[in-house]
Length: 143
Image 1 (spheres, rainbow, N blue to C red):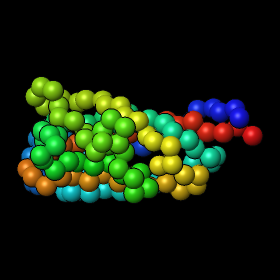
Image 2 (image 1 turned 135 degrees about the vertical axis):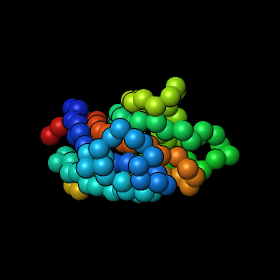
Image 3 (image 1 turned 180 degrees about the horizontal axis):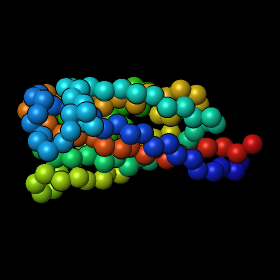
């Protein structure tokens, strides 16, 4: 069976956090405050297999240790955060307030033909951060 690659880029541009305005210097109209959760959808025309995503984040401070709650990314209800789905989604920014791009694996079966949902869940705590864009890339069967 032959496969090809396809992708979809979503502009999220949301501010996740416990207090609106904690990330000064960003327009509230460009990065609306959503508190703890945001969900959107996208469509895949063919039968998807495994893949990966690239996500752009700003100023994540949560430590992502196994003892802390984790920010999560769910595709169709499947947690796709962390290396091979370990749940360690959205790693902390390495130094200060800056943008980072992070890549992670999407396991086979997480994506579906037709409408797919992607959900971002902020862990409890005082972390305030932005999500810019996410690009999802997958393999699909060629007829």
